[in-house]
Image (cartoon, rainbow, N blue to C red; front, side, top):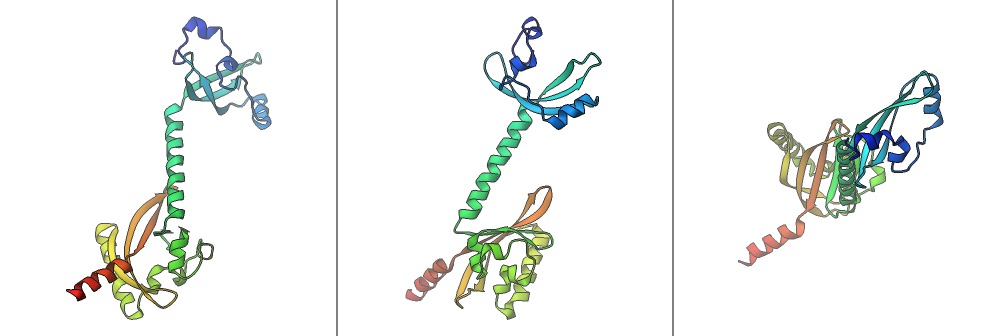
Length: 219
């Protein structure tokens, strides 16, 4: 069998002998479902003969004589994929929140799904003040010079329509202290919970641009 036991060995075992926790614990609500004649399903971990562990899904029901009839399905690959996805999401979340680079996620209605403090600082506010909002005050492009705002916005929208993403678009915004910041802006599609979103990345390259200008002037 898939557990590594021979059929003869497997026939002598109870389900509790195979489970990693050596006991079957069923919530009272599910136990009541069983008593009503309904089938239930739950997940557990099972120890194979060689000591390795697999994830299983148990579908069970009571037979007329009161014995439990259970069908077991190996779901190890699915659970490993779920664990890998969760770990990847946790790593992304930590990098997203701790990065000095400005990050924000907008949904298709331009509502802020998430943002880090670096992004909020560019807007002259805090992260808590923009999450879940959809207004001009939550958009980085509102910091553009009024005369250039429409031109730049149209340019960005045209690139997104043609290529589906915006990469390393250079523009300038006015910081909350009145200084001008040179930004490298990227907008990438991002799917979250089966819904389309947009990941906004903004990098302050003011020092680099100023250094380039100083070098050019010195020449």
